[in-house]
Amino acid sequence: MARDNDTRTMIDRYTWWETVLIYLGIFVFLFFLLSPFIEGFLVSLKPLAQLFSSPYRFWPENGSFAAYVSMWESVPGFARYIFNSFLISTVATTLVLLLVVPAAYAFARFDFRGMGLVLAAFLAVSMFSGAVLLIPLFRLMRTLGLLNTYFAMIVPGVAFLIPSAIWLLRTYMMRIPTELNEAAYMDGASQFYTFRRVILPIAMPGIIVVAIVTFIGAYSQQFIFALTFNSKTEYMPLPVGLFAYFGKQEVIWNELMAASFVGIAPALIIIFFLQRHLVGGLTAGAIKQ
Amino acid sequence: MIKNRSSMIFAWALLAPAIIYVTIIVAWPLIETFRLSFTDASLKKLTNYVGWRNYTKIFNDTFLTVILRTFTWTFFSVLLKMVIGTCGAVLLNAAVPGRHLFRILTMPPWIVPMAIGIFMWGWMYNGQFGMISGLLQRFGLVDGPVAFLAYGSSAYWATIVTDVWIGVPMVTIYFLAAIQSIPKDLYEAAWTDGASRWMRFRRITLPLMAPAIITMSMLSLIATFNSFDIIWILTRGGPSGQTTTMIIDTYQTAIGSKKYGEGAARAVVICIFLSLFCIAYFRVTRRLAATEKA
Image (cartoon, rainbow over all chains, first blue to last red; front, side):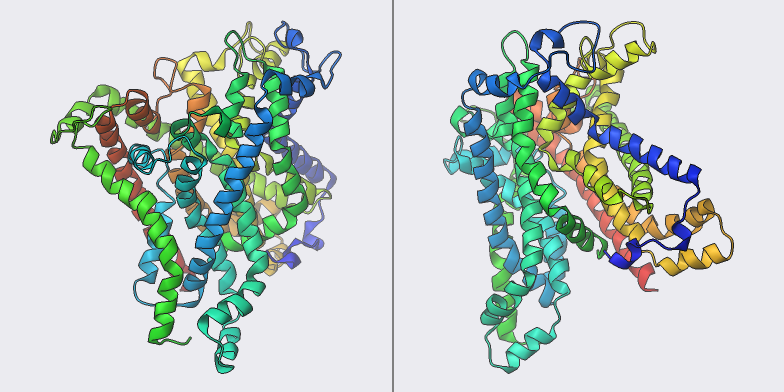
């Protein structure tokens, strides 16, 4: 993203009614995107009896953070679900990076016969969702003895995270000047040495962006594989674990929402601190296609 | 670039792990799905080849309705994502104070684990106690509670809205980047010639971001076609199958009823559609790249 295009110039002066319209539009747009979180937060503050009473009230009466305390007692395994989600996402992200960093470098630097085809094939892979391949994947996991383990939720997911990670990192690495490779070659460095000692340190900011995006994807993608390949409570990740708040009679909505906020807090903190890198990195990767 | 035998071996060695991994986890299961679709595979030990029986069995009225529904559902969802994404990107591009904060605030639906966002929508759609029904009643727009997920047509639109909600942030950020990569001198020249703001949007912004819109709508089409979590959590394809899309139908047949063979046949039909989308995507992006060079 070119920062220069973001500065104000003469033509960006708005009349007062244009300013009002812009803010109004942004308000409506953001209200659509944020209303579930606003409502979810207010629900988490309301006592259960108030939730199930008519007529509907937007603001909580005698709101409290009680649900944030009681949620840990209603579903004792909740801390474990968060831990599981983090473990699964971290291992998946590490695996993706180990596979993707070398591959992205190869795609960015070399152009041997057949590589274009492989790149296209990777892109095609990202278009098939896990849901379509569930049956053979289920049988594969059973054969490998991975059903009801963490690996059942990690191994299939990684394959679907690889393509976009390759795409993003390749774009980043293509901007590293080839003169660096030539200079290293002249100095007698081996290909591997050049990759490890010259390219990797320079590509680090790009690798970090890819790691964040992959982590977010891994966190979000846990639903279908966890639903299908794992039935053990102790390995459940957060998205499936939240179903524990669906009691026999009714859903404990205030605790479900409180638990959701506890579950998403880490993700929100991550964006808040890294948003500048994230937006810049993502758009740089996206626009060059 | 140095092109010799050793660097060729090096390049393929770098690629090999990723290629092998994806082959085992995606390519092989794809072939296996195809094979299974011609069998009566289920939980039983014995599996027989049954020829085209699974296919002739699924091509009935219900399945055709499901296909049609999947397409209309996907179409409306993608259309809304593109329209809202374009509006959002234009608004966020406006040079008003606070724009950096607004850009961050668009991201939560995309960053937060999908299941959590969907649970929140599930509560909003609740007829007795949910926010949407509650506010509609408060402002006197409806007489009684509206249980959005209890009726076929409202559940259909409710799932679309949630899908749009999840998809819009990424589309917006992508479009915003496309708008910002348009050279500013174009706007300045148009401004000097007295072109109004609307004219500048109509004649500069929109044509120059068209490639981004086309690329994104293709990618979004494929992602939306594959959408599973939203419908599964909100309605499980109900009420009485009225939000069942092809993915949901496949899941229910294969994993729900354990009819692997029939499920695989459904998956193959999905794969055929996806391959067509894929080919279309490659052709479109190649053409776009060609016109850019020209």
